[in-house]
Length: 451
Image (tube, rainbow, N blue to C red; front, side, top):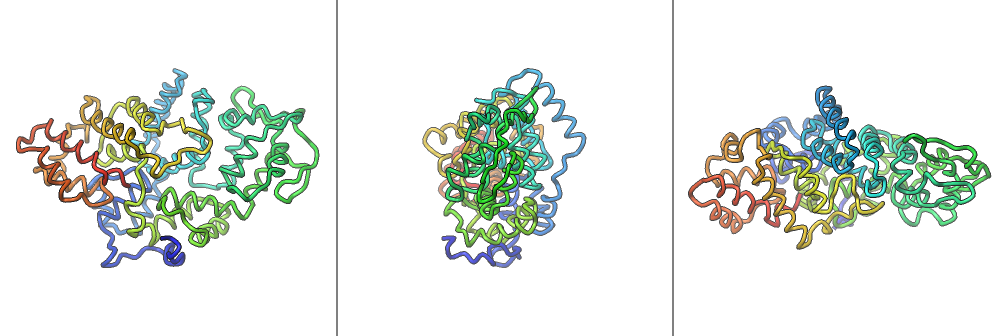
């Protein structure tokens, strides 16, 4: 399909039309993709403000208030004191639920999947916490700077065995992945480039949980990396990789897949203007993210409802759109069961995403997760019960509840037959249990899996 998309039209700024108006549906789409969701009140305020102003607000809301930072830092200190990395996953789940800077957290999740590092191997809460903060600090900044910092990050050094890279036996793991998975993609380097780049990284190690350069273990001889020759160290090696023409195209493609659509894969022609934007802005991420979120393609029916929700988007989106809170440790455990354990990506490739999120096992798991959230005495909605919260939102009858869910949580319309089934589940009693049954049924519809 995207072979017929005009790139000029695709990345031009969206202007509302009668056919594609700026409405609640598009506002909800923007908040789902640039964050984890929004309440009905936030969506209606966004419609009133207009599309351009809403994107501006999202892009500007990337600094977390000091009070929030104090709260999450205190929680992190208590969590790190336990040394339990799984508790750190719960801390991050809480942060996603509570942050007022949703785009910042969504981009932190993006980079975590891109520079995938698993606590299953690192097994050090402090190192994983430091990497998580690094990704957040650099999330919308200079990609080249982020690439250098992640290359020297202790958690990454452990994960890809770079901390044991010695001149007598260069370890090629990181050299391969920085080119294949982090920056250039297959076909844009040779096996010889990998061997030469690995020599650049010799002597990089960890001392007292910090990066250290051991000059006695560094190969000081001349190297030839991607056509450049010299007695390079690791920093110069990273710089050469980041300067390749393939880098902006590779990163822009990953951003479009993350924010716009996973299928079909975007063509090089479609991505070219965004790659040029990255080059023109010295690999700054924020300008290209803004352009994507403001674009015709992003706001079109080719993007809305064209992605499968990841487990994080599924669970955090459900709670955030209904002002929900819950036991973060149980939430993190449920996310892991569904295949997206925070800080536990399955491999250096991260999560495959897309249709791989959905199978008979994960669909049952998603159903069980929503059921658990609804039944748990730790879950509150706007600090109230579900029934009280929905009434406070003007949902007095069950048809109102369905409308509220469709507006805030569904990327596509709920089929009339599904509405009828859910309405029957709710019954006429209006009791809390019937309401939970009906809400659970809504969240297990195939349409709810799309974001």
